[in-house]
Amino acid sequence: MTVNQPLCIKFISEANNHYIYDTESNEILQVSHLMYSMVDNYAELKSFDCESYLDHSNSACCPSEEVLKTLKVLWKCGVLKPHIPLQTSKIKGIGLPHSRYSLEYFVAEYSRMLTLELTQKCNLNCIYCCYGKYYSSHRSHGKETISCDVAEKAIRDHLDAKHSGKTITFYGGEPLLEFGLLRHLIEYAKNYCNEIGIEEPSFSFTTNGTLLNEDIIHFIVKHNISVFISLDGDCKSHDSNRIFLDNRTGSFHVVFKNIKLFIELYPSYSRRGIALTLTACTDIRKTNQLLREISAYFPVIFASAVSDNHVLGVQSIMEGCEVSKCSGLSSQAKVPPVCPDFLNWTPERLRNYNNCWSEFYATLLLSHEQAQSEWPLLFEIFVSRYRKIHQRDIFRLPCMRIPCDCIPGAVRTYCTTQGYYFPCEKVENTSLLCIGDVWSGIDSEKVEGLINSMSELVDCNNCKAKRLCSICPNDISERNFSFGSHMQNHCQSIVSDVERVLREYMGLIEKKPDLFESIQWGTVCDDWLREVYFIINDNKEICKKCANYTNV
Image (cartoon, rainbow, N blue to C red; front, side):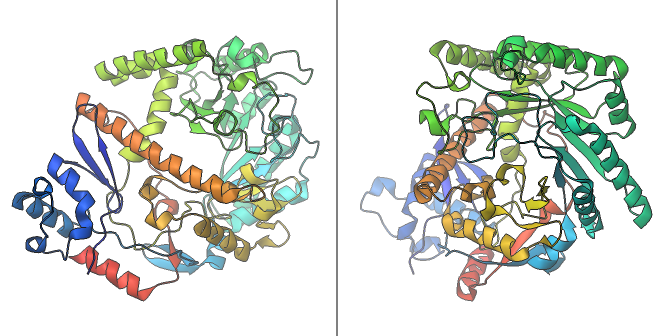
């Protein structure tokens, strides 16, 4: 039989060491130059028996007996196994280590997080906002507010689920424009939990910070609410984009005054953080300095970046950040003749950005504690960039995989002001992605259709990067443009990015072997999400082959 080469990514570090990342096992192997070259010759293997390896026309490429023995040991451990090409798979249910469920039951009884769109109103007019003038794939700014009846029904649905994550978050617009309603819904949820005898949920929201006052701050602390305040850096960086509705006045001084009030009232409150949107306007050095002053009081920093991929035709400069699909310009963005300043990466801006990173890495290799203290912003971006690789699970995948880590309606549920359910707040404007409403509940057939659509559109089962990537339901929301080309480019960029991050990761380990082991990476979620997997249509012949390869 012909045996295919393993699904893997090969890369050479800056120190000229050779590595192979094995997709199926999630292992990273440092290998000899000979083995590194041999992986490309799997097609000439006749069986898993080393002695049957055929001679090559170029004897210099012929593996030594020692290399073949090493390879056979790896095979027995489930590493660098030949890859069996798999066809598109259809979801039939959801599995956990000790149970299996129909998709209908799962979306009805598992509810990890509910996000309520409290209001569409906002008192700011942020230039890069996804509801602003540069975007056509999202709704515009609105004036609607959710009714008590709709919000209370959504809360009951969430809390009634047998396996509820009991997490409720409030979204806008600016949620504090409806603080009275927010207060009522939190009290309603707590009272409902007491009535039915379950644990109270946790609550969270993100605010632009302009409306914080003593009453609101006291309420936040009393109910132990997690709150993120949007602060895009120092005064100039922040005010370049986050402006009031008059389109002239920046909001920094108001927000920072309220941040200082929060600190004065409750200096030790731990459930608060800063949410930054990084743009070309951001002065990284000054922003980092500001965060150094307040990071002791705001221990959590979340940084996202406005994507410039579709506008400038280049990879996002902010590679280390999580590129926000909500704030990133889509291919349908109404791009003006002149690039907006929040995407205008001038040579000087790019040079300053790179200089900061060079200084950060020099400090990091001396002491990660010092780097975290002196560069809190870049340290957070650094951790976000390498967390998934460093904390990856080392085991072989099941024989097939669905390209979606999100189970719409179960992992996250977003309820709009009108009572419609969506997978999350990023996709609310697309009827294709509506998965139900508060009156009828989650439509499991729609959920199944979304997951299967994602599976049909991309070839995840045969992708080198499938263990370190996931497809968002938002990726299927723009089919009215060249979607096939869009996803092909998207997947190619993911594979390239994974290869680059792997090379960087191992390069840092070569320079400081204990670097990643010494960093506090934060707790890994211990709920059902970590262990969930998809049950699919079984192709018995393929599954049998995969089992044989696994057990050699």
